[in-house]
Length: 127
Picture 1: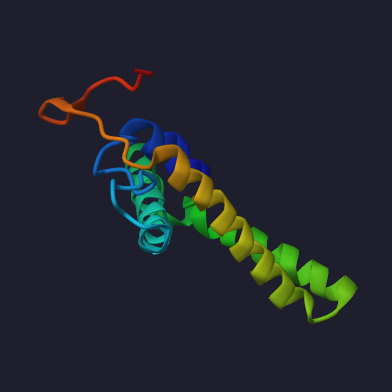
Picture 2 (picture 1 turned 30 degrees about the vertical axis):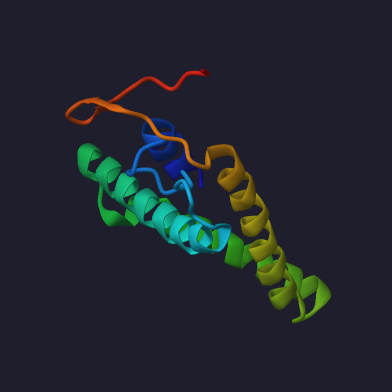
């Protein structure tokens, strides 16, 4: 999340480049799969670009580390509470994603920034 949010969303909010900006007329049910997949793709691309700039191998990619951390947490929970920890962890993760993305949907619904020159958009500001 933090990779895409800070390095992608904050740069592209209100443009077609931002998967977390809900399009005017887009339902939440259309937005949810688009934002989940779009944020993952954007974060992966941003992280690959970071590695390329620094000359680091794919082994230094942070996203697999986050997945491994989640898997480790669910395994530790399962060790202490039993195998039902896996579905509970998965469900609570899905609920957290849905709640978070519902906030994204409401906060950014229909937001549009005008492209003032090629690749340059107006500054985000209250109107």
